[in-house]
Length: 494
Image (cartoon, rainbow, N blue to C red):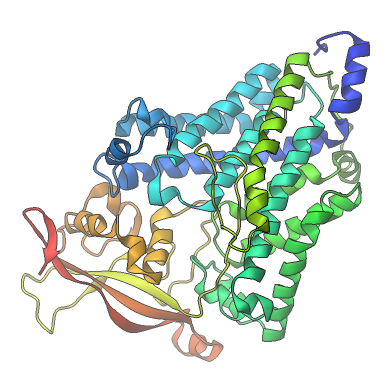
């Protein structure tokens, strides 16, 4: 494609505004980000009705009645229905898939930017009505990454240097913020013992978590020390010249892959990996991989330069609040300072639980409860339940209900807005809600009563695993919810 403007103008612009060395880094970053968007929209399409629908656990219309647009900008303030929500989610999935296969690189620059902006607006609209189900740090991280992707251009222009630096700034806040919150938070991060507990107590263990938990304790201490290096020193090195910055990015990628193997953290780790890629010298990476050089890259049009400069200025102004937060002794973790989730603060596991408490929902079809009543467990897809079931790998897919059940195990306060409605849905075998579960012990006729029990879960020892075949051992702790039944106005005490 011909450059807009004369060759002389293009040469000057290319010299200060863009760098063709990062063409491959941009390509992989944008395609990977489109894949994450695709997963996020599929999650919304498949889980939205049960969690947020008009008859969901926390209905969007009820939220819209009490929260104004200025506090939570969203398309759904203009109109909401379950069908419209599903249309937005599937539209986002389709657009993500198109960008994943390279549609943006075959379109004019302006069209490509509009496509990325549409993705951002659609997902912002979902997040801003998502309530507790969308209160995770990786939602803001996806939105902030997606906002930067709007201004990275496509193969018609070389990557803009300013936006490449802003991706490093975002990665720095993700990693350095997480490192600071650990050092300032739980003592076990300072004495290098947090991984004695973390693999067992993390929100959703994966298929290798049992094995990670049983690594020798000296190795766990090495892991924690390496984590401090990766999150407190390496992020600073991202701002050094090449090839040192590429090495720092490589360290981030390796440490994030270690986290991918050890647990299920939705798309947090994959997004962090993607954010490291724009710091990699794409030209040298292409040489190592035996790829040809960059395609013909035109000089950026003047309007594009103006837009990129404006976006950069906006990010710099908004950076005041996360910088102040990083310097504060009362550091916030995973917090957005504005309703459009731009330039946020991040962090994870400022404290680590020493034990794992799980809420187990149980039902019975007995008409009258007696001491001999047999209770059957509801099985969730990702969270621990059946002690003989190996934890599954779901990330980067996000099981929102399973994650909130983990929070409920920490404190009933986390379940205040949605747990009672969940019990009500299960008492009538609500189709959309039951689809969120792995197993419904009452597939034909709803249960007559439900209850919830709090259990202490721990990984079995190697000897217990050989003797019983179980991955978990569980011990009853207390009653979480007494037996309830369905009455005229929903569940009440039996």
